[in-house]
Image (tube, rainbow, N blue to C red; front, side, top):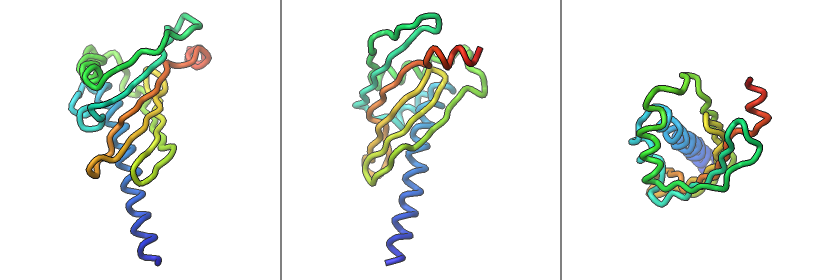
Length: 143
């Protein structure tokens, strides 16, 4: 009985790290202008919905959707000019992990992403992302 517990725990630790790495590939793919990291961590049927708010406005803009193809293009161009600082946030928190699905919170330069991942042929892939830009309060606290 103990043997299977430790084996399951080792698998869980490996899965947790693989889920964390998929989220890091996503954010670092954009930060480091490396679309190949998006391609290896995001499922081609990505469903991404976001709510953006310009820093000087109170209201969020209606949800915009991003496809896998569009995300690859964003990764090619978002930081092409090197506008992000080397210490731009990339805080990954694994919120829940099962044997086939996982949920992650990512705090990044553009805001907070909540991700759903699934394991396809043994590989963790991001399939859903719901995000919003930073709250006005968090932007004011930075200034």
